[in-house]
Each structure stands twice: as C-alpha cells, then as structure tokens.
Amino acid sequence: MTDLAALVDRPGDWHLHTDYTDGQATVADYCERAVANGLEFLVFSEHVRRRLDYDYGALRTDVEAARETFDLTILLGCEAKTLDTDGRIDAPPAVTSVADVVTGVFHSFDGDREDYLRAAAAMLRNPAVDVWGHPLLFAERRGYELTDAELSGLMAAAAEGGVLLERNRRYGLPPSRLVAVAPDYGVDFVVGSDAHGVSRLLTKERLAYERAWLAQQS
Picture 1 (cartoon, rainbow, N blue to C red):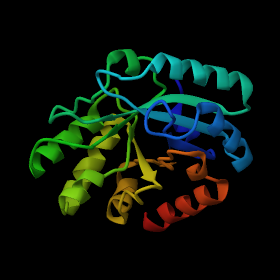
Picture 2 (cartoon, rainbow, N blue to C red):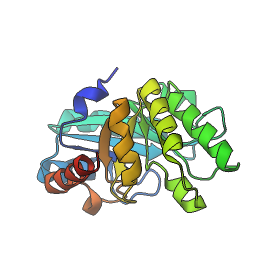
Picture 3 (cartoon, rainbow, N blue to C red):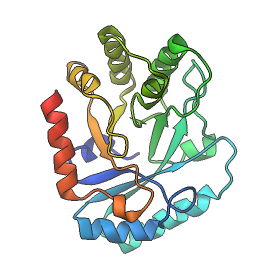
C-alpha cells in the first residue's frame, strides 16, 4: 500500500487525465513534462465507472512501464463520482483494488441539498476513498451555501475517513471557507491540476503558489 501521507509535501500533481478518456496526452507524455517541470511524482486519476468503456488494465501497464523509464514516483489512480447517500462510488472493485489513489467526486447526483450533505459525509467515510476531488464543485453549481456547522461536519467526516482534500487548480476549489476549517480537524491538502493535457501540468512554481494560498486561508 502506498503511503500517501509521505507524498503530501513533495512536489507532484495529484490529478491527471490521459487519452484513455478525455485527456489529450499519454502517460509517457506527462512523465516527460513532469521531469522538465521539476516534479517528483504524478497521480493518474483517470475517470472510471462501474462499467468501463476502455481498458484500465492497459492504463495500469502504461503506468508500470513508465515507472521503469522515468525517475518519478508514478501512481495509478481513478476518479469516481459519488452515487448515493450511502457514499458508494461509481467504480468497480477490479479498479479500486489495484488503484494506488481513489479520488471521490460529485458530478451528477440525484437528490436535494440534505441528500448531498449526507452523501458527501458518507463518501468521505468510505474506506475506498483517499482524496476528495474538486471539493464543493457540485454544491457551487447547485447554489448550495453551506453553513459553518455543515463545513465542520464535512471536515470531521474527512478526518474520520483519513481523506485528503484536493486543491483543484482547474476549478480553484475548495473555497477559502472550507480551507479555513480543515486545520481544526487535521485534514491535509494536496494539489491537483485536473490536467487534460501536458500544458496544464503543475510546475514547481505553480505548486508553490497554490500551497501559499492554502496557507494564507488556514
């Protein structure tokens, strides 16, 4: 099992999409750029569903080959949406059992505001989930204004589940209000570009900027 906590302070990118789904670059393309950008590790958080329309095993093979080629820590991951108020995610066991990093997110979700809050807390307690990707994106799109108590409840759930929160470069999330609450619960942040091409891969400079922003909010 990969020690994710040991990677939190190292320069890397926690959220990448390849041409296996809606990205425009291969695993090797990202690795080449990561070396040039001064990064030490990458997480390929490819989109998954319970029924895949691509070969996740082939992605795993590409990651394993890249580990032999590049002087990087390269992790196989997945990004799966939350399905229900029980916190189940849209990923088959064949994927979650081999992934180094499972990122739970909200894309589409059937339910009202209270259902969303229950689902989010349950997802954060789901033992399969390692990272909460683009936190509160769904809430912002639905116009949900969460109270301080509700934000605290979500951070308590993240702490209980041992889940890391993503500072998502693409969407500029989570908002500062959530970042400010996280330290009270010992919740750590990681930074992901949510890149769909190598031009969006984090640089050490951009990573330093995002970490400084996180520090200012907490």
